[in-house]
Structure formats: structure tokens, C-alpha cells
Image (cartoon, rainbow, N blue to C red; front, side, top):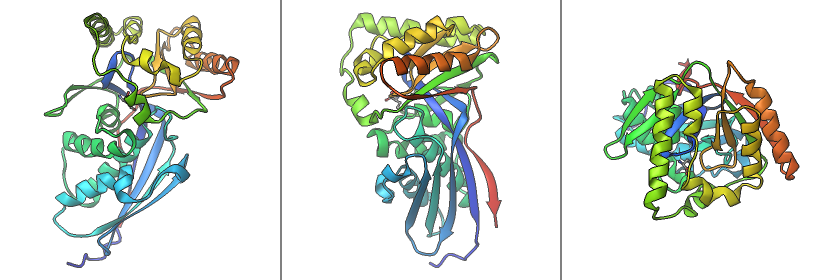
Length: 318
Ligand code: HSE
């Protein structure tokens, strides 16, 4: 069947996200309002998926649909389409791949939201998350949904159950702000997942449950201090620490500068600190973290962010 040439182009954006936040491995995620990926999609007559990638780290990103995050999402969504068509997808990267800030999740989420609109699929937010999570396979090797949940829904999200997928969205206290440093080193998510223990001791499990519970209790109590106490992790972070030179030094510096809690962002190498914006200047904490990385010979970029919105369509050209 030939597609009528409606020259429709949909433009969508999705935010950077930080997953885990300490003890919430593969469960917690927060959308960050400081960095975005943008995606445009349009129908093409040729029943193929064509991908172009521009911006941060684009040269390292494969454009073959089956190896590309946006491509995998597009293949899944075309299976649901009533019409048969191809897609031209252009990805504009604002988030560096391999930085631990949900770069692939943002591309996946923006692509899912854009194609949903273009093809009139009317997918529910949960279906969009499921589809976007499949795109994560391209970078992480597994369809983990913590980054894509926050990238689609915005704010803070927690995965209650993976099968069937159930996600809760919570608003963080208004004074929650994040100080982030992005070191100029790359941590491959597959590698960062491969170093994780297959089994954990009962005592570390108890430790992590306490911390994850504290993080959520802190949200309920509007207490950044209690949330910060929850950003400790006895299982995942110790296994990954060797991948980030100077991690303990940077964490210590952030806490000394007044951060309520600090953790590896996602699979790293970025480090994220939670700050009470009524008491502490997040920018100063980010600079202190940058200086701490510098002291161990690692260049890094400081950044501040507040919890942000999820993926959305920002333009339609018909
Ligand atoms: N929860 C995932 C991990 C996030 O830590 O591997 C990857 O961005």
C-alpha cells in the first residue's frame, strides 16, 4: 500500500534523567530540566526506517535501525500502525551518550511520543514506557525502564512492578534541586551492568531497603534531609566505584559543601547530589564536585537541574 504523502513532521523533546538515586536501582528515576534530546519524525513512502543523528556524541551512535535506540522504538511502533509506511527519524542529541544521564532513554522517549502522535496510535503512558524501554536494549543490553519512565512521565518515578509494568509518579518537594558533574570519561552501561553481583547478602538487602524507604519517606515528609539519607547504596555503587576515578572524593566534597545526599547517576560516570535549594546553592555544590574531580586529574562539567517535565510534542508541520 502506498502512503498518501501527507508531509507531516512531528517534533518532540525528552529530558535527561537520573536513575537509581542511591538505593533505587532500576526502580527510581527523576527527570532533569537542564538537558534534552529532540527528535523529528516524518512518514516516507519507502517502507524503511532511516535515521540521522546530530549533536553530542552523535558520531559514535549507530544509525542502523536495529542497533539504534530510536530505530528499535520505531520498529516496535510500526508493528502497531494500521498503515504501512516508513519513517525518517532525525535525532538531535543534547545529552552525551554514556554519561549516566539517560541519553538513550531521552532519544527513546522522544521518538515514542513523536511516532505516537504521527501515526495516531493513542498509546497510554504505560505503553509508551514499555515501548521506549525496548529501545534501551540498544545501549544497556536490557530493557530497564527507570530512565524511560521518568523521561516519559516527568518528575520522579518509581517502578512498582516490571511485569506487568506499573509505575508511580511523585512530585518532589519544591526545594529539591540537583547538583551534577559529568566527568569526561565514558562508562559503557553494558559494562556497568556486567560488574554487578548476581546475588546479594541479606544484610545489604536490609540496608538498601531502609535507604530506599527513607528516600520515599523524605518525599512524603517534604524533607530533603531524609531523602538525602536515602541516597546510600550498599550493593550497586560499591561494585561500580572502580569505574569512576575519584568517586569517593567527589561524594565527600559534595556532602561537605552541604548536599543532603549524593550518588552515582544511573550507571555513571556522572555524579548527582541532592540539595535543599532553600539552604544551599546547588551551583556551588556542582563546582565543588568539579574541583574534586579535577584534584584526581579528571575533567568534568558542572550542571544544576530541578525535577522537570516528561517527553512532549513541541511542533507539528503539516
Ligand atoms: N538503572 C540503570 C543502571 C540505569 O544503573 O544500570 C542505567 O542508566
